[in-house]
Image (cartoon, rainbow, N blue to C red; front, side):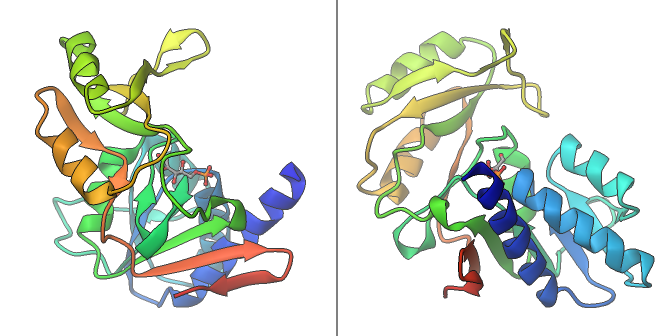
Length: 225
Ligand code: 5RP
C-alpha cells in the first residue's frame, strides 16, 4: 500500500503540472506529494520552462533548489499565479486539514496570496468528515501549556508535537499542538474559536481555500471538482 500510495502521490503531482504555464510564479506547498511536483517541475525547467516559486517550508526550498527551480519571495511578488499543495484530510466542500509536516502557517500564507490553489493527494486523504487526523495548531512557545488547556476546553486532546525525541519547532520558531477532536462537525466555527485563543498562531483548518482537487488512485489522477 505504501508503495502504491507513493505512485498515487506522483500521479496527482504530475497531473497538476498540466496547469502550470510558462512565466508563472508558483506557490510551492510542502510534503511528500509536493516532492513529486518539484521533481517534475525541475525536469521541465531543464527543458526550458520559465517559472519562479515561493516555497512554503525550508524543506520545500531545499528540494526546489536541488531540482533547479528559481525561488523568490513576498518582497518581490504580490500575487502568485497558482499554488499547488498537499493535504492531510480533504473533507466536505473541499475544506482541508493541513500541517502534518508542520508548515501550516507558511502554506496558508502562500495559498492565500495565490489566484488559484490546486490540492494534490492520493485518494486516502478524502474523508466524509474532518477530524480523524489530529488537527495541527501552531502556538507560541511561551505559555504553550496554558494555550493547550484552552484548546482542550473546545473538546480536543492537544499533544505537543515531538520529532526524534525532541520538541518540534516550526519554521517560524513556534510549537505545534496536535489536537485530536475526533470528528469536526463545523470546521469554519472551530477555526474561528481557535483563532480567538491567546497564544494560537494559526490552525491547520484551510477553509474555502481550495479551487481544485486532484486525487489519484488505481484508476489514475482525476480532477474531482
Ligand atoms: C505539511 C502539509 C502537507 O501538505 C500534508 O501534511 C500532506 O503531506 P504529504 O503529501 O506528505 O502526505 O500540510 O504541513
